[in-house]
Image (cartoon, rainbow, N blue to C red):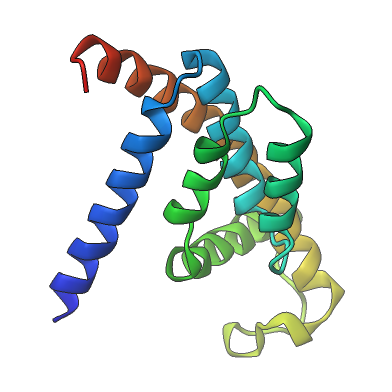
Length: 149
């Protein structure tokens, strides 16, 4: 049952990307749109990311709206928990451990020190994801057009 759910999610993500990358936009615009979508979706926006992406899609006519929202399919709520964990660990590596707090104590109610580490790590991940996403989208658009899909 778990494998079937994973396969269905993977198929949905793959299909969303294929449609987004097949739109009539240049590879560069598709790459920028997808990268921006990944950047915003990676950040801990507490649900505000989707309205932000909708506003960007509406405000900037040249944006590839499907590529903006394809990021939401990739960084879904199941994946975001792992992103937050890695973000926090990056923040701890950069800013140091939080005195007096054990792994059991870590949660959003643990205080500003946890949130700062989470946010610092999250911004670093968001930038990294955006750079990689641009390259992947740009190459995928070229590949899809070359193969006529």
